[in-house]
Length: 113
Length: 115
Image 1 (cartoon, each protein chain N blue to C red):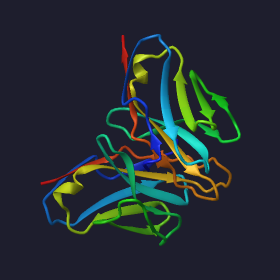
Image 2 (image 1 turned 60 degrees about the horizontal axis):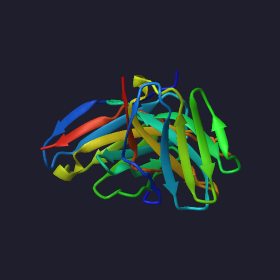
Image 3 (image 1 turned 90 degrees about the vertical axis):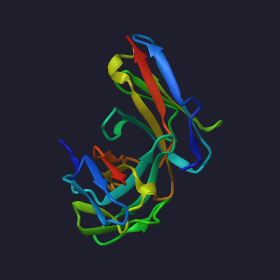
Image 4 (image 1 turned 90 degrees about the horizontal axis):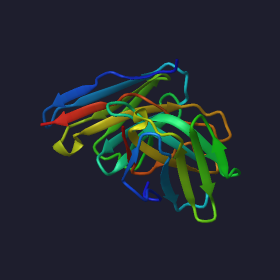
């Protein structure tokens, strides 16, 4: 699990701002990436995923960007709301038939009203 | 609505006790996982199972065993609990659909305290 890491352990933003959570990975064989959100007292929940043949994928208020050249993944949250406060994990999965993701250590997002 | 259910939200046990953590999923998923989550260390894989009666060690299997007698149920066993096993335990499941769409569905976790 050490190949997936985070640039910032805690991110504080104001309500309404855009948030960017970063993730670095080191395994160039990883072909699938997922972002999870974990609210206090709950298990992680899937937010969005992206395959290695894509650079960008958009969901509702969230966008994931993948830069394979520098092995970097980011999660962008538009118009951040207090309900977005949580710990966010990125996970990578190495290709070749594996179905076991490796998780990063997580970033805590704090949204101030 | 898909669901992964862990039998206990909080559990307090004594050193040396045998502890069972139960997990049930209702999605007919082939894969099931047990993770432990500790502050600053993220999620670490203990064991996983890709089919009934099949199990594979994860990154930190020492001190743990698992059982999967039925497809929907995956049990984590601490044969002799120790204080360093105090942690949040998360169960997850996923399907093997092929391709890259095997995201995990997690339970709410069991916070185990070993005294």
